[in-house]
Image (spheres, helix red, strand yellow):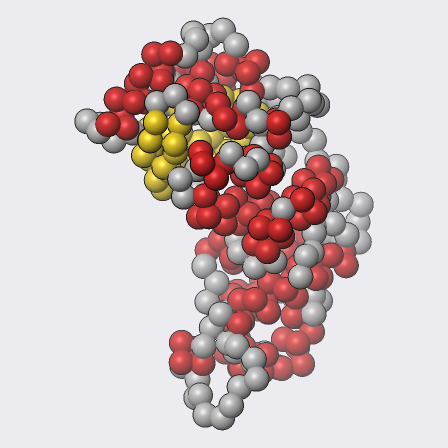
Length: 306
């Protein structure tokens, strides 16, 4: 189903679809349950999850319908254990519960905050690593010269035009050129959707996030299909392979770190680097040598008016 973050009803739908999708992934064998008899649905039945979690079937059924606001953390933890949720999925479930509890109150309006100058100085000092800061919506809000040069196809894309910041999700799904730039496009697409799904759990009242997800669901069948899987990802790191238009194939290691920029906002600092002694390091150094002085305009290159 296509459910977008928003009001309390949507939160209930997200809870229902998330729990049902996780339940469908677990076989009775994996859960240590008997498998006799024909099964009409994939995965575990609701009553089986209830047994594993130590609650009644009626209670778990009510929970899976989205009635989560009064559920204790201990019970949520038992359900997470029964469904074999990983750390990111467990965090997402608790975020959904937190959002449901606050639904009766007027939620705080999320404010976008500027990246402090000291963060930009830090980025500019990194001359052999591509670095950028993104918010939870995957907008690029700051970066160094090499970070912009590395992702030049995204910054030059029509999806970054007008008053919009460069956005990884828009570029990935709405610019056909991304399928050439990202060598492992499908894996990257799934990770991108999973990151947005996690942000929707944290910030269900973020209007700009709702609009972004609505836009992507409307314009991209691939995004719509992946969004319906309810996969979640919070931490992001690994190996990224890019086909850069200027220096060719790059295989880079990347790591993302939390970057608190205010009491309300935690952005993400991502660094890309190449293994020493490889062809990718040589090509990344070549790209770095072509970039302008990072003290001149790296911030201007990624900042766009709202």
